[in-house]
Image (cartoon, rainbow, N blue to C red; front, side):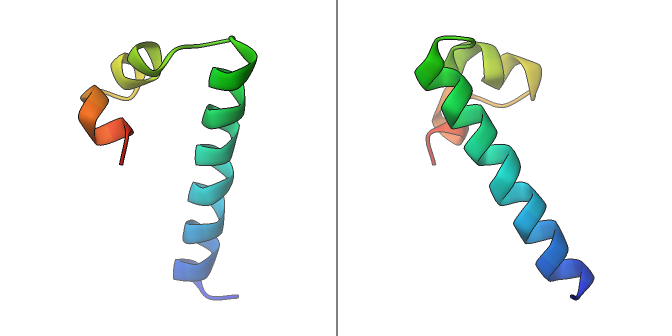
Length: 45
């Protein structure tokens, strides 16, 4: 597996984990945006 494919796969897993945590109520989109130094608009993409 190439480095680029591995990075894309890991990024997808991380994004999925964030969405699951938001649905479970463990975090909020605003909280994740703050932790990752992003705006909420960037998160919603």
